[in-house]
Image (cartoon, rainbow, N blue to C red; front, side, top):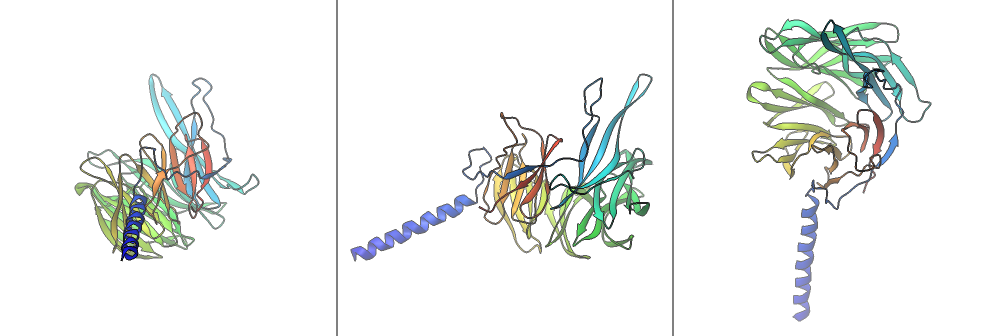
Length: 381
């Protein structure tokens, strides 16, 4: 009897012990005191062009804009910041000088320069295609939105190495509203079509350099940084300004599989493995980390934090993000474990602005200070 009772007590103790470990695994420690710290492997990337400085002011006159990343290739735009003077009036003019497509592994990889952007236009999005690139360029239009400022005119073009072919064009309120991506190697793009003071979100494929509309949503816009792709599908986050609502749109090949409203106060969202992970601000000001399956059937809260923002996913289980002070964190979407990301490239407690870009399974491109770039790899724990 005594042995049986002791055995029962031991079983109860072990059950509570294992439960407490599992529960702790789904808690994050954004204060910096987490036991779940990861030091990723960082490999410096040599960029294909240099940042130039103004001889008089010492300020940078150009910068990198990352248009595309994958496990081998980066497309970076050389964006210049000109100051045009006319008498006592100074006007800032930001434009893209050209695009560089380069293989970032090693120093002898392929590097191609595309001097194809029309004068005073800006490029934020591009993808490699055949022997060239498909890219979206913008310029401010004389067309007015009726009290909300001028529209932006966008054009989607293909450059084959010798000439440009225009695929599609339109107007939008947001200059980054046309975004190109590859799904299973095929080019697609999301854009806004603004006409007669009404906006429509359009998801499109490209076949033989011709545009084909897959889906259109009247009154919805593309949220910033809102297209993600992996082998499970593509994800677009739409935004309805009048009601401040967000919607998750998931597709596969040339078909929309799910449209599900996500509610208000969605600050960022990303695709990780077979789930959408997003950040939702609560009434108390905290950030709720939530997960939504790609078919919309399973939705759950992972945890709550204080100041995380700008989440970036991958084709693996990890998401990366920063807080308001650019301190980096990770989230393992399989286990719910979250913690600090310890970067060996930052020394003497310096903290620079950081951005992450997907580059394969649990692999990212890290941008620090808008000038330095690294391949960031997380080993399975």
